[in-house]
Length: 251
Image (cartoon, rainbow, N blue to C red; front, side, top):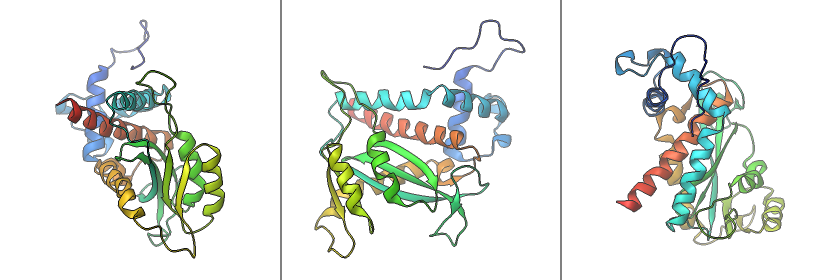
């Protein structure tokens, strides 16, 4: 899936893609600065891995990987399409950059927000990164539309869950109408209305997925100013979560 290097590439021989990928994974897991990437491990310099990460993100490698692994899980009947769960989580953005803003839950410090939608078992479908002060409601329909068409079985690829579970304090009515239009039944708590009984028990999986996502230390705190590089790490982490689940089913 990685784009090949030109045969007549000027300059020195590039570091092998496998070693660069190992360096990127090392940064994703351990949250070390690119400049402090250990050269003794043979990954190449941090600048090399950093530039390769941007090149692969531009080619759409990590999103393709995530989509392929979702298709493998769908073929193994490991995706729960009866419901999709949506929520958001704040992270601090140490260096600012694109899609950052004052965080309402962190004393106005600069931060970002991860908007996540997953299936009924907690497998991530789509993650959107926005500024920390962006309302969750604005991304609800974007998340549903962002679920990639998942192949893996005969017939048309699956792309819509049967229902969407979310908790929103305000303006839930437009979101519910939009979800109905795209073919998903909304189950959303509304302002001044008692919470739906048992909704929390069905939605706990999205919090579990956030825990898995932010277990990758590079995503618990945002260091990249460039949004595309941060999204590359997010897509790679989603792919790794899917790969772990697929590996568990085959063991």
